[in-house]
Image (cartoon, rainbow, N blue to C red; front, side, top):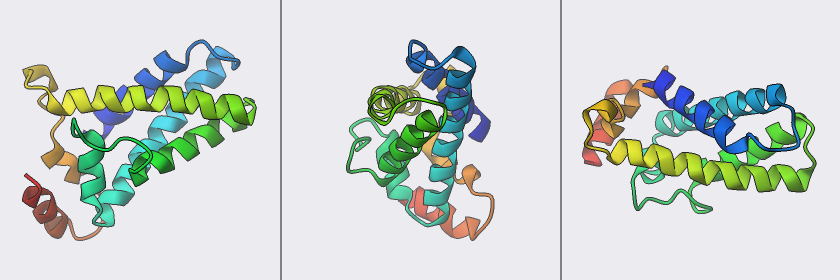
Length: 146
């Protein structure tokens, strides 16, 4: 699941950020790093017991905006990544603000889909993102949300 999330995030970010002031290589690198930042933040939230934030982020009707800590963190990280690639601060913030909500909406639709092709996008399987820690406790927390 982690690879699916990261690949979809990278693809959506690269697609959404395509026409910008960076060259194609820098845009692809920024999309890859941004996707990695999203996965890291999700893993940290799950490992820290903040599963509600993950659920809110990926649930339709959830809070994938300024009031979601994961979203805020990834927005800041994506802005910094774009600046590191050569964008000025205002453009980087606008680019992240344009690309991330679209990415989250795409992911939300995958998690909400009843299409068999999207069956791997399961909030209950989000525990697979945890690399260490008390997995049994985290699985219990995730199950209690549904």
